[in-house]
Image (cartoon, rainbow, N blue to C red):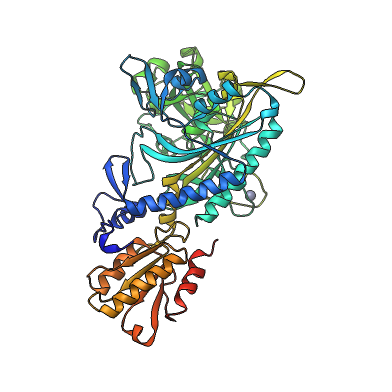
Length: 578
Ligand SMILES: [Zn+2]
């Protein structure tokens, strides 16, 4: 490619609306342009990068026996109704009607479509296992699309699905995918971790999330300083030091607390209690089995509820904090005076779920369900009818590792780049995908599903590989391996040499960009640094002595290389694989 004819609209300044580094640099380098909120166009450089990512994805999927499909993005609602997800997934799904009034949707993932193919075509255990994948477009109506390519409403995914006759088969398929994912991210030059995570609306028994550490990430990961424990905070647990409470009175004692609205207020209130001796009471409205139900969540005063852990523990499809009026109608008091004691007397359909950090605690203080009154001397198991105990609290940095004896947890920001799920028989049972075993018995197919976002890889690569001058692409993703820069295009000899070098490099199997623009050398260098091509060969005055300058974008080191050695040198550097 010749830069003079190639479409690379670089920008000198950071775009005003871009916040995270990857967003700024992908716009400035002319890789993508925004069409609408969460919707981006790949420009030629971006398409080259995306194709390189997809090539790696294909190679690694094919290596573990994956067979590539291409499924439609437009689905009949019927399939999603069969799996139960038409109702379970809320506004995140783009829904529409066709001209006959039939409900349709734009696929956000393809479990339903792949399962429908399997159930129609696969009859016997002899046809299993199957490993199916596609690289295809997905849609998600994000409430807050932002951060460039990090949170999109339409994006490209590699999604894979495995079909096995039993759990052991699924374990093997899952392990194959896990290894393939490790190879994919390594080849893409991304530093990543594998963490435990919530399976969310996908369902299933086990999942592993792949994350890339970056301050732009929207996920929080808790990882141990001592062992290999790492989990998304939506799943992470920690060990709390034991607290020895005094027994306290035989029954809770009510006392007036004028002006007390919060945990903080009660700490300083005369006769109040330290935060770790208070019970925090939060009212939610949860969707349980398709019905709305009030839920009271109890935690230690100094702990924070994690809503994903809360909805996962309940098995709810959705949950929201109750409004002020709903709370008063339910428990007869404002949000600052709520508690679990006798709460079910007031609200019979109230479900009480308590965090495990409260288990066995005595002599605690909590709201009395009466404005400006609290109860002290509350022994939680004696005084509150808890329906379910669960791990609900958000872990924080410095807490003890749940797996080893000595480690402390560090919580850091990261972005999700891949997620793999053991689905089990969730979809095959609801949609009736069965096979006959060796004994002639019909059993539901045991499934796994595995996803990687192409834009997530591109974003993570930029977030982790950049400097003040621009992007530093990992060699495997770079749109070009090398740029050949002619310092002065008016010099006929330089031009001639550069054309010859350009052809030789192409012939050596390299992706080459020839910067033949009539611009100052400084402008050319800046642009090449900004778009992040790993190597730059500069043809300047030293060509007369048979020398070229070879610049390494990552190390920022330059060296003079002899004209007759440059091609093999760059070939060796650029094509070395991690
Ligand atoms: Zn540990």
